[in-house]
Image 1 (tube, rainbow, N blue to C red):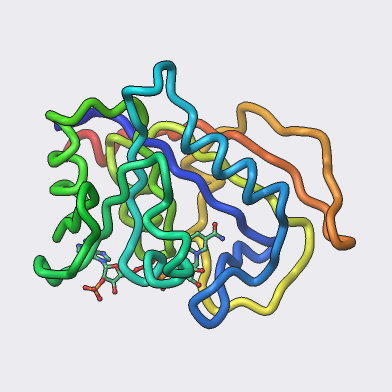
Image 2 (image 1 turned 90 degrees about the vertical axis):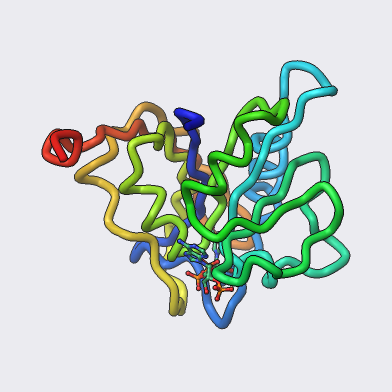
Length: 183
Ligand SMILES: NC(=O)c1ccc[n+]([C@@H]2O[C@H](COP(=O)([O-])OP(=O)(O)OC[C@H]3O[C@@H](n4cnc5c(N)ncnc54)[C@H](OP(=O)(O)O)[C@@H]3O)[C@@H](O)[C@H]2O)c1
């Protein structure tokens, strides 16, 4: 099993992440942060991989998917879900990680949505949580699970502002609960 992946998410003060199948806000600096972080590799021949739920995949405008310069893996219970060449569907979270073992992949990022974050946040392979803290309360129907009990804050950027919305980039480290390690 590939041992490590990281999570990247933007959430508001109520841990809201989505509304009607899309993002509740538009923050171009956050989109750039997401693109830069998930795309950066030490050498151009090696790519990162992004793992996402089928609903998040469908929330990306067709012209912008697959997310370029990254191997896109979509979780769906339908193994025949169509994906572009070089990108893949997986029918379980572990299968998504396993199919990357032979690939020349540098980092693996879990990019949402809520169903996939929930599974990733209970997985022993979880490493860092890159969390954009959107310092406002938006109308949301999709939420990130509670994370502050299992993640420890490592760093926080300066607060930035865009469209009158304050936000900052935080990095947390996963502390896998010992009672789960014993299972
Ligand atoms: N703020 C952010 O950073 C952020 C990031 C990403 C997404 N979002 C938002 O989150 C919302 C979508 O989240 P969501 O929770 O509704 O959906 P989701 O997690 O993106 O996708 C759910 C789908 O993933 C598949 N799935 C889930 N677990 C699986 C498993 N173990 N094995 C196989 N397939 C599995 C199922 O697809 P099938 O039905 O095909 O079986 C399920 O319907 C949208 O509003 C989106 O904009 C926000």
